[in-house]
Image 1 (cartoon, rainbow, N blue to C red):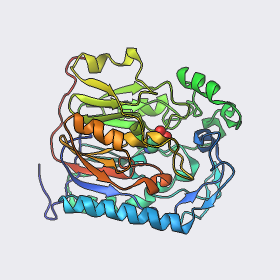
Image 2 (cartoon, protein in one colour):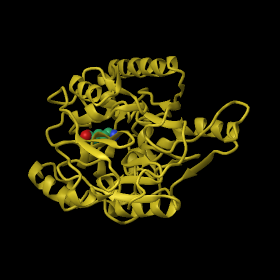
Image 3 (cartoon, rainbow, N blue to C red):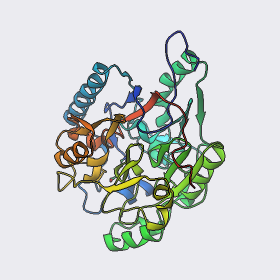
Amino acid sequence: MAESESGTIVNSWNEWDPLKHVIVGVATDCHIPPPEPALDAKVPEDSDMRGQWGKRPQDTIDRGNELLDNFADLLRKRGIRVDRPTPVDFSKPVTTPDFHTDSQFGCMPPRDVLLTVGNEMLEATMSYRCRWFEYLCYRPLLQLYFEEDPNFRHEAAPKPRLTDSDYRADYLSEKIGVQQRLKWAEEKFFVTTEEEPLFDAADVLRFGRDLVVQHGFTTNLKGIEWLRRHFTDHRVHAVNFPGDPYPIHIDATFTPIRPGLILNNPQRRLPEAQRTMFEKNGWEIVDAAQPSHNSPPPLCYSSTWLSMNVLVLDPKTVCVEKSEVWQAEQLDKLGQEVIPVDLRDAYAFGGGLHCCTADVYREGTLEDYFPNQ
Ligand code: DAV
């Protein structure tokens, strides 16, 4: 591979090859956005976030940044280059010809916005109005990579209109009840419609030639079809996980650890019919260990299953949140070196160790891990 004078290389084909360069999010100015359809559907019915919006308390932002800075330092000490996004003013309302929202969100989980496949970084469409402009926080970095790596391809998926026709009104009641939500999730009846392609980057897992994409609240079938037509050298597989009443993002549900091994959330098992590709190629899907906590931290969108939102540094080494002792123990028994990282107080900003990062460069090449299709 040609290397530029700066040494910058954008290239990553999977979730486990040796990590050399990564983006870590920042919590600065992070907001709880005002109500909007897709976001409301994700906020659990008993959440302390219902009815609240505005800038998050400054002391929680400072604490989140402290933990994210420490994580960035830990990675740097292991020889990994770490870059950080540039927050925009998230208090600014956004008006397009099609929608208005009174504030934006933040730039903590870069994983949601940026999808790296080989030498390409693709800005996702996103599916929340408050996150429509989030790519702006990453543009200074992507411009830099464009200058420094002559092979880097900067791509952006078509910006969606996000009118009301993108969302099912059925989901707008607060009192749907978890049983109804589970039934709808099983039937693949999600809050987003098939009006136009929608996807968040965190719904995509990269396995070399195969991309595995979760169909749920944040990614619709048209979004998956768009990815299929875009990544023409890849096989794109749609998966869904009944058992999650609020299905967004695949990375607290299905977590590849190394070639041949995936953790699956035991409350959100991959349906039997979708296991064939893994079984035919000798991949093991094991139930993830239980989370250490009974409830998420305050003002957090995500479930307790951020326990399995781990960051793999190489096929033998994995970062696990420090308090998630059961997950750490399981990975240790599975033969991985486990690095504990204190991040729980940053969960509220949008996720765990996988969410708060986005790959720029992992060593390694494009491989076919599933030759028997
Ligand atoms: O379990 O709440 C969180 C995923 C964040 N990227 C969950 C999914």
